[in-house]
Image (cartoon, one colour):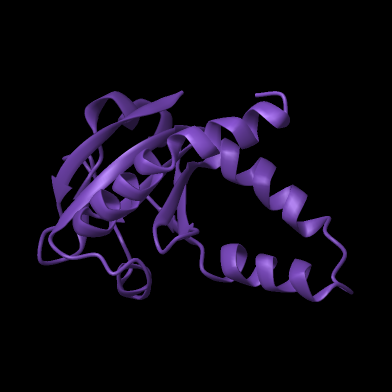
Length: 143
């Protein structure tokens, strides 16, 4: 289970240190891809395979299904954790996420999200200010 918020820095080669508590789960392989809200998603291989199967089963005759598949699958890249606990984030994904030197790794149960620190702080401030409205909407959904 991935939870928590961790502040890290990218090095000049685009390497990101993964928080120690998440490394064991990711040592068997991981996939990084475009996420929503201009962050990156990092999945352990098992979680990625489950998601990819669901995406592959979407009806390709629907434009939204094709767009979603392209966003997540075409943008995906296998990554390996090196001996120092780092992964290399491809340049095209760093650009998509607008990642500067300072980033945030956020645990979201089945995946990690990688955010530019300034973007994360802005997003989080908006979500926190809207928390009552969000809670009411989710309450209607049974959460």
